[in-house]
Amino acid sequence: MQNLQEDIRNDWTREEISKIYHSPVLDLMYQGATMHRKYHNGQEVQVCTLLSVKTGGCPEDCAYCPQAARYHTDVKAHKMLEAEEILSKAREAKANGSTRFCMGAAWREVRNGRDFDRVVDVVKEVTQMQMEVCCTLGMLTAEQAKKLKDAGLYAYNHNLDTSEDYYADIISTRDYQDRLNTLENVRQAGVSVCSGGIIGMGETDKDRIGLLHTLATLPEHPESVPVNALVPVEGTPLEEQQRVSVWEMVRMIATARILMPKAMVRLSAGRVRMNLEEQALCFMAGANSIFAGDKLLTTPNPDYVDDKKMFQTLQLRPREAFKNETKIEAVQI
Image (cartoon, rainbow, N blue to C red; front, side, top):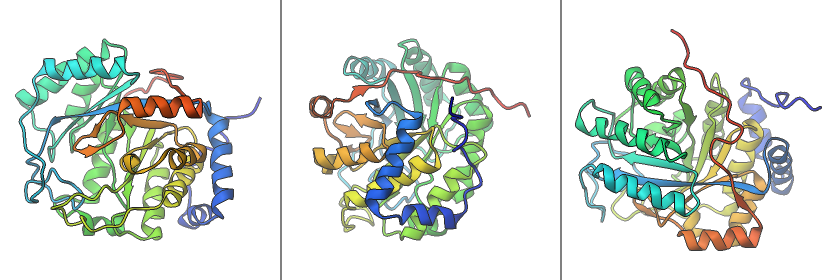
């Protein structure tokens, strides 16, 4: 019986990661595919749905984001959705095969009050639908994380976006440590951590390796690692950025898979610009999760019909919710 803990390391060096990342791409894909099949079913892909429950008007200056109030984009700000509208979207997502439902709000940080209370109530309701419930609401205190955990929250997304060295070139309204503090608050509460980044923002390979190094050397690996390709939006500082190639995505996905074997590696934003063959390469390299539905917060995404056709062609099947769940215990302070 092979020891499925033997590849789990939190002491990776940048040099080791760089060597993996810069491997000949077909060899790298093979390594990622091999590690993927050691820890996961190669035919299973988790289908997730991400809904913007509060859109636009964000005070931050993330250079990639059309929801920042300071940029002139086509995104129209709207207040928090009513609970029943969110629940209706969750039921629709489940009917279309999603097993994880994520709610995003364009907040810098969570503020206690009516809107947060509504999120907590919706988390309770969606959990009863037997879906994994995820939130991405900005910075979170330890007390807020515990409140969400008590409501049944399964996962919390808070991306690091890029390397610590390049971070200030993309965002100036918060520090890298702020993001790491939120991840720690989530982990301490016993909530599953979802954290990844975006490529195509003008960063170097060294920055991509730096991001992976930070994620892979956390005290515990994130249970979910989204790999996003920038979708340039007119009106944002990064509107002129060129599309990243599929081989850049493959390198990130395969390296993430090798470094963090047990994680769900999510082929996230930018998928709408990929054809079937390019997405297949990403699945081969180690991706085993996608976001379904026609939007990822405010950016375009393939619709459910297209994804169902892709699953049929590639003979993939949706991964069930809570599969192989190991209970995450809250850390006692």
